[in-house]
Image 1: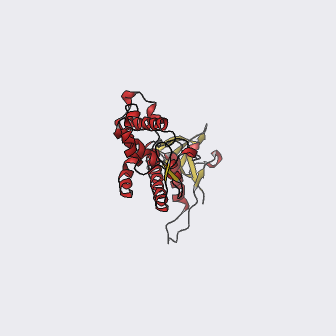
Image 2: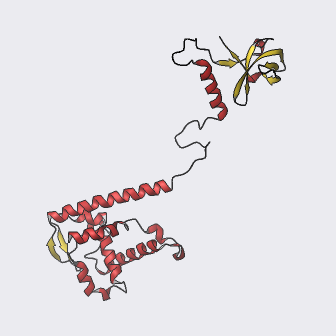
Image 3: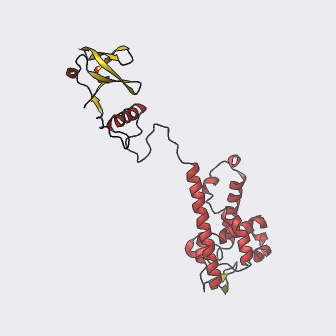
Amino acid sequence: MENQEKKLEAEVTAEVQNAKADSALPEAEKDPQALRRESIQKAIAVLCEKFPKAFSLQQEEIKPLKIGIINDLKDRIADLDGVSLSKIRAAVRKYTYSIQYLDAVKEGTKRVDLDGNEVSEVTKEHEDYSQEQKKLVLEKLKEQNRLKLKVNKPKFAKNDKKPGFKGGFKSKKVVSEVRVKRRFAFTKPGSTAKPVNAPVPAKIEELVKGTSVLVSSNNRFVKGSVSEEPKQNTVTITLDTGLTVCVPVARVMLRKE
């Protein structure tokens, strides 16, 4: 019996997901697996209706079934409203590998036939086997849920904020300025040179002619000196490259010694 149950386990555990979502879809939109799950659910419902003393969807009413109950169902297939024997087999397999049924298989519990008559007791070996199958089913359900979450995981744009992430992402300009400040604030390991302080925003009164400054340009800092004192919050700077530019005071930095 155990060899037969192990052989069927792989097929059964593939059907353990709830078919409620599938049943809400129009018939044309359902895939073959969804249709099969739905047909098995209907077959289980037929078993519960025709043999209420053996089959039930209520946890407290579930009982271990007689070993070989499929053979008994063969003799009474005519009572099952046109449901095929293959669907009945699949329905019994799904039913007996549900978490609720596996929990009901306890040592000493009476097994019942289709009419609810007690026929034998569950052995310790059968209880142990049921608990092993329960662990396998739970592990596969967990893996299926993990894969489903992975597939449905929301994707975020580069500059979007992720849940639980405060502050969003830094712009290229901010990153560039931070790198420049680090460049001026630190020296290479082992160097004997004194570290240079990071540049700070210049004040208008500090921008006298001849003062050495740094000008922010394209997320970088360019060295230069004041050639004309500020006028209306702009200042004329002669860059080390020889180019003379007129820039807003807000773009001018001083390197404090």
